[in-house]
Image (cartoon, rainbow, N blue to C red):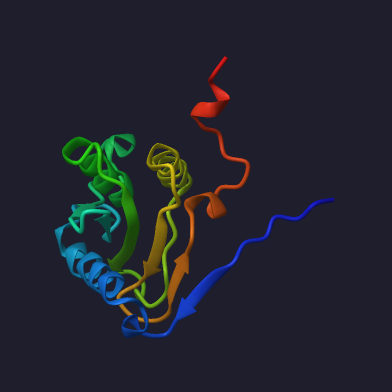
Length: 160
């Protein structure tokens, strides 16, 4: 039976990243304070680096009617699509802070966000680098959201 494998990089410190990616991660970490997470206290932020150098941030926004909330990744990427519809996306940095757990390891996008980022890659016609980290601890860098969502469903599946 075939196996699914992918490669990723692990870094101990943000200064091991390229300077623009280190800055992107710092913005994602500091922006967690803007998340609206009164129910879970799990504050997530995403910072998206565009090809033109612009950075667009987003946070998770919870709602008492749980399905109504939005994740930080989709919040940021929706802003990118709305404000910079013709700009390519280079990278997305995702970080979190929580009062219930130590924020000392990377967090990964949920399934819905993996699908959303994957479709943004299709729209972008290139991979989007993912930089995942807590407030402290190791940093994981993944070359493509598709690595986290093998056998994904996309627009090409809908074409007749």
